[in-house]
Image 1 (cartoon, rainbow, N blue to C red):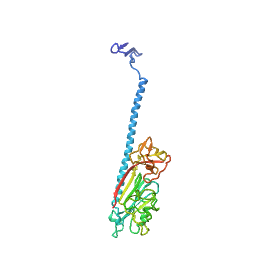
Image 2: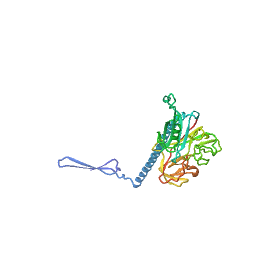
Image 3: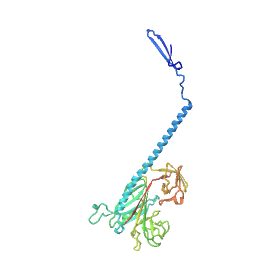
Length: 362
C-alpha cells in the first residue's frame, strides 16, 4: 500500500508492506523515497569553498607572523632598555664619587687593540663606604675600571693607595684585555669613551707620550679630533691609543702634564642579552655601498643607525630585500674607531640599541 505525504505535488512517498510471519504476527516495512530535488556540491562550489578557506588561512598566518615579529622586537627593545637603566645608573654612581685632579684624581682611557673600537675607562673614586677607611686614611681611594670584552661589559675595582698608584695605572693602561672584574651585563656590542679637554694642543717636539706615543702630529697618532690650532679637543679617536691625565710615570721633569678632562661622553650599544636581538649573516659584501645579509627581517634606517658586521661598525641608510645600503662608503664605513674590511660570506651581523651618558667632571 502507498500513502502520499502532504499535497499531491509532494515528491516524497512512503511505501508499506504488511504480512504475517510463521508465528502469525504481523510485520511491516516502510520505505522512504529519495527527494527528487536533493543534489551534491558541484566541483566549482568545492573549489570556491577551498579558495575562501585558503585566503582566510593566509590572512591568519600573516597576522600571527606580524604579531610574533612585533613581540620579538618589543622583547629585545625592552630588555635593552632595562639593561641600559641598570648599567648607566651604575656608571653614574661611580662618576658621582670621581676624585678631582686637585685631590689626587686620575682618569685614563684607551682604545682596545682587538679591532672592535671598544674603549677601556679607568678613574679614581673616593671610597663610598666610609666605614672601611682606617684612621690613617688607608682605603679612602679606589681605582674603577670599565671595559667591554667578548660582547660583555665588566667592571673592576682596585685599591689606589700611596706608593702603588703607578702600578695600578699600568694595569689600567695595559693594551690587552683584563681578566679581572665582575660582569655587569651581556650583549654589550660597543663601549666607547670620548673625553673633552679645554687646553691648547701640545706642539710638535714637546715630550708628551700620552698624547702621541709614537711622536709627532700625524693624523694617525693624534688623540684630538679637531684642528691642532683649536682650543677644544675631543679625546680619543681610534687605533690602540691611550689617554692618561697628569704626568706619565718616569717622565722627565719638563714633561707637560696631560690636562684633566672637563667632560666625558660614554656610548653603549646593548642588546639586553635577548635571544630576539637582530642578528644575521653576510651573504655578499662588495666592500663598498652594498652588504647583502640573511637572518634579519628589519633594521632601523634613521640617520646615524649603525650595524656591526664582524668587528666593523657600518652606518646604513637603507635596508630592503635583505640588502643594507651605505650612502657614502668612505664616510659611513669603519665607524666607532673600527677598520674598513670586505667581509666574507657567513660573517656575523648584529645590531642593538645605542645609549649615551654625558657628564661634566670636577
